[in-house]
Image (cartoon, rainbow, N blue to C red):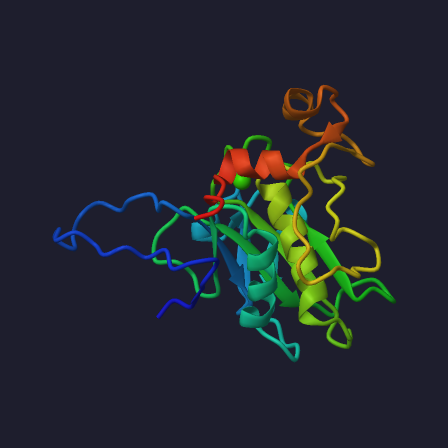
Length: 229
Ligand SMILES: [Ca+2]
């Protein structure tokens, strides 16, 4: 049974009386699947979360299950809050059908000394041309991070898979991971402090290639939930 975290309101409508053998449909809501259970990724030309394929060499191989004191529900509820303005559903179990984006949260003993957390993502997916990207957040077994700090990294990785530049000014993207619980994406243009991967969308939204409006970009690719009901 899939565990889907509710967002602002219930989104499940009654199914029509079709047979259950219809061809799979693209879901009306995009799905971000948080994999806490461990997975083995194989190399491919392009990411395919549904078949555990990654386009990133560093992600090839075995990623153990997350073994921390909190699980997907705790992290996922924070991630759901980050993405609350958008038409995105957070799933803690793998959806029966794709497409979906997968962010793996794994306990890793391979982090450099002194590092509690490391994230890895494919190159920014400008315009979200791939609906099935794969990203990774590794947590050191002895780390004392809480679910909120892990959620910040998950949302950062997810944002990149939806086309945000890596060096975006996500308010949660502070080195301290000291984010407020109700943090979300700014609807403002901020300078990108790293290499620019998606200059066209930055130019369209901000008038310059090296500034980014994360909120507008996410709204464009995910859809925005209705305001004021
Ligand atoms: Ca994508």
